[in-house]
Every structure is written in structure tokens, then in C-alpha cells.
Image (cartoon, rainbow, N blue to C red; front, top):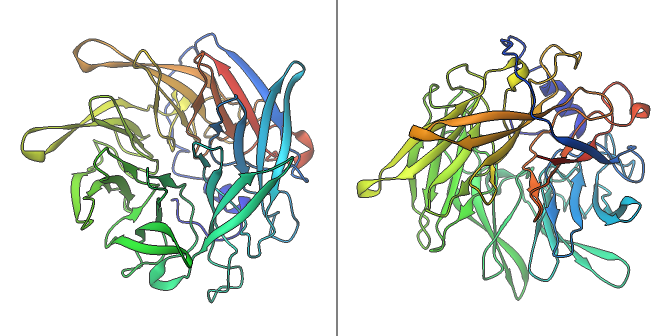
Amino acid sequence: MKTRSPHGFWTIILMLASPFLATVSFPLTAQAEKFKVLYKFTNGADGGNPSAGLVFDTTGNLYGTTSGGGDSGCFDGCGTVFELSPGLGGWSESTLHTFTGGSDGGDPFDKLIIDATGNLYGTANVGGISCGENHGCGVAFELTPGSGSWKETALYSFQGGTNGYYPIASLTLDKHGNLYSTLSNGGNYEGGSVYELTDGTSGWKEETLYNSNGGEPAAAPILDSAGNLYGTTSCCGGGGTVFELLHGNWKERTLFTFNGSGGGKPEAQLVFDKAGNLYGTTEIGGKYDMGTVFKLARGAKGKWKESVLYSLKGGTDGAAPFSTPIFDSAGNLYATTMHGGSTSCGNGHGCGTVFKLTPGKNGRWKETVLHRFTGGSDGAYPYFVTLAMDAAGNLYGTTVGGGNAGCGSIGCGLVFEITP
């Protein structure tokens, strides 16, 4: 599902007619929450159709990417990097970089990361140096703040072929300044790869750590304290795995293989809890085949046990979670779904939801739908949107559609805030 061709937002539109048309309606009352639209994109110079989550800096500004709009040199615009800053009169938007589709890259699809000095890092799906493709094979980039402006630097241009191409996953930064991520295209077996980027005297260098010979690596891996990497693969047949790469020799070990009832097609990044357990979501599978939120607990002799914390029901409950769950200080989990939600969305399968999972007795978790998107002014389709949370527990995210009515039937997308 996450493998992309370099045609920007319209590829997403074709994906929206996904297998979630046949959903069962489970009437639920959304929790009383305060929902606010912070900014609506116009698909002009400010960009359009943000498909990923947001990241905070230390002063409360939000940063994100749009996969369309901006420069007209790409199919539907080459995308932008933007900043939202809070103020007395509301939030103001600034475009930090407009991609051209050339050496600087184009069509960024996943969220940014930020380092301790405020530099931003991300990937762009196309552009870069010539790699045998008319539109380039994509880049990893850095944005550095300066005096009133930001400078974009393409750190590495992907080579195509066995070195991989068309990056869509975000990046992971280690304590030494090395970057890690995945490619769903290319590799020795054309099944994608896990790679490391290191900065040396002659520039940034890519090293392939693992070539997948099964499902495609679906998101950026995460690091534990020993430097081991943990990630997921997603298989077109509905399966997938959770894997570990041991630091040093980068030997791969499969920790869990999804079987349908335990979920299928994990597309999002994993997250650790304080005890070292892993949590994630699957696009499909579970009791109703509408996706799951799962936990992997480390057991004896290095074995891991999976528990399905919640099976999405489809209909008003939501379906197809593509986001990484996040924790609040009380141990509750929050995530988004791409489909399901409001029956007034007008597309037959809903425009997505924001939901909360609360731990209860006997390992059971209770789900509360915080917001159901309607496809109108409140947005539609929170895509690969891992929510951001501020110190007060407010949630922030984007929708790839809805919002500005002047952008056509899909809309240009927006940034929202939810106070649970």
C-alpha cells in the first residue's frame, strides 16, 4: 500500500477507493472534545495536501511538509516545508522551503525530525541527481535555520536499482548524527531495504544494512539504547513482520509474523513504552479485518508475544490506522485512522478518525473516538499522521484532504488541534 510512484497527491486519491467500502456501522458517540482548525492550505505557494504528522520545536512552533502545491514544476506541485507559529491572533503559517523537483527533491510524504539545535531532516520522494529516472530517485534533506530564512541542503541523492529509490519514510537520528530509514523500492531483491546515512569527509554516504526478500519495509526503524533497530515489513498479501537488526553486524531477526487475526500490513513506525515493549498499528486484520493496535512484549529466551489491544470495527468506529500510536503521561494511547468515521463524509467509507485507547482491567483497552472527519471544513483523511502532543496534552495533526473549498472536490488539506 505504501509503495509510491512519483505522481504526488493524485496517487493518494486513487488509493482512497481501498478495501474499506464494505464496513459495518457500530454507532458510537464521539467524546466531547474541542476541535480547532489551525490552518487551511490553498495548494498555492503555501503548499497543499499534507500527508504526514507534525513535529514541535522547543518554543512551541510546529513543522511539517506538504506533498503538493508550491512550485508548479511537478505533476501537482513539488511540495513544501512549512512552519506554524502560535500567536495572540492565532497560528501563522510560513513556508520555509518550496521544492522544485530538481536537485533539492520533491514530493515529501512523511514527517520531519528535529535535532537538538533545531535543524530539520526529512526525505523527498523524487528529485536529486540523475539516476536513470526522469524525475530523480529522491533525496534525504536538511533544513538549517538562519537569520530570517532557512537553508535546504540535499544530504544524499538516492541512486536507484539495488541502492533503492523513491523514499517515503521519515528518518531516525542516532546520538552520533547518523540517519536511518527504509526504502520500499529497490534493493538486492526489489523488496526494499533498511539503510544508514553517515556524514564523512567527502559528504554523506549510504550503506544498505538489510535487503528485504519478503514484505517491504514500511516505515523508519526506531533505535533502542544499545543501537539496535526495530521496524516492520508490510506484504501485499495482507501479512507482514516486526523485525530487529542487531547493531554492528546488522543481523536480522524476525520478532513476529502477522497472521490476520493479530493484524496485517503494518505501515507505521513502532514506538517503545518505558518497559521496552513495542506498540504499533496494522492497516488490516484483527477481529473485523479493519486494522488493529498491537503490543509486542519481550518474553523469555528473547521471544516476543503479541497482544491485540484493539480491533477497529469499521463504520463510525474507524478503519485502516496508518499512524504510530503515541502515549500521554497517564499511559493512554492516541492514533488516527484513514477511513471510517462520519457517515456524512459522502464517499462510502468515511474520512477517518482520531481515537484514544485507555488501559483497563485484565489487559483490556477501551476505545473512544475523539473526532470523526466529515470531508468538509474539518478535513478528510489523516494519512500517515502520527499525532503530536504538547505539554498540556493537546493533539495536533494534518489531513491530506478537506479544508479549503477552492481546491476542488478533494480539498487542499489542513492542520488541526484537538483538546481531549
